[in-house]
Image (tube, rainbow, N blue to C red; front, side):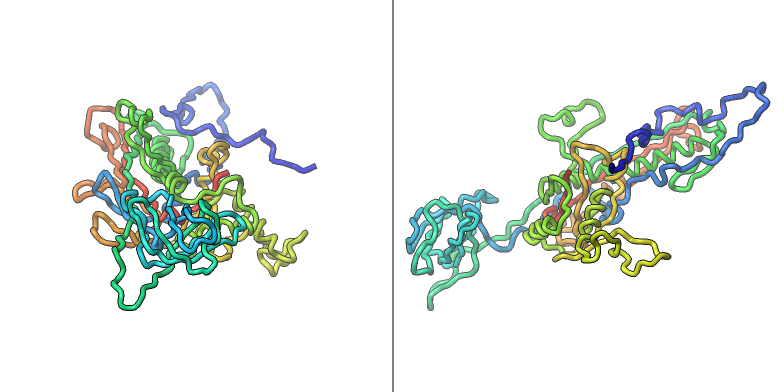
Length: 471
């Protein structure tokens, strides 16, 4: 019978943060009638290790200032013209035909990008069909999105009337001594935009509690130590805020028209922002129904990447199970791996650790993988059922876009954060202290309040090159 990890005892999801100071963290038991002193461990044990989940954007992105409520950029469109929903009014065997382009045109007012004299290939869309033709365009009706063509083949049109076809332009042909090409084409960039959101946090402690000594020597991930518990709470607030600076950029969604977020009263809510998961789900590529675990499934991913930007190097940020699935898939390619452990460190001996993991592989493109703690952490994305995400494929390098602020083309990482800043105000990471304790002298409040603020948005350039892996 196969074993399994038992559900009890499980992992603790009870947060350590409370809105008030915990009495158990300070010396409160002054019972001198107890003659026995407890043997105490002064040092706080770090049972969860580094609890921060922020690392993703630090690895793949960059930060740069912006001085507007709206960030806009232009991305290149396709260079060549292809339509995938084309029908013919002529019957099979016809030497000429009128083709209708039924694709949704963007922009709709621009009409089809086909001109007289251009040569096209038209292919029937039906699976297994061998019907295709090559033809020359003899007339174009831009109002009705129709083109008249004459086929090069003596047998005429190979497919039936009204059959759904795809069509692309591959060149042109003109007779001697004729005029040049009619009309011209203008570049059609895709314009995208995003809005920054304001992220805030605060830590407050009274002056009396600042003067209270604790019995536990506390420490935090950034190295702060001491017996003053408020130091730990303040530093953990800072660490939590820094995590939110990243996770908000990953998870943010725009507020839809008529939503409660837009109508929310008071100081909360506004319009939302387009986070990485949202953008890739809308404009990128989505793998759903479980992790790809075979080379055939990865071949499907590679075929989709071929149809996109074909970026050579890609990094997959994934959860633990997805990492194991890739390791198992690659190990299965080893001819000696069946029932053995010869993959990984191929010169294994009794004094060498057996490496059962892979850092990457090459199949058409270079794929590197790395664990993303955010997807594993049970207090964040780890362990959820609905909306579970197993990984995100991010292209490496940078892309060229037209920067509206600079007024010229600029190299930008595929993922980068824009924060609000000007010559007099920098809102990348603001922190300030108010009150009358802890060195502050801004009000009569007998407390120290530490405020945190940032205003930022993430720009996902070339989202068509990203892959999100949903469960």
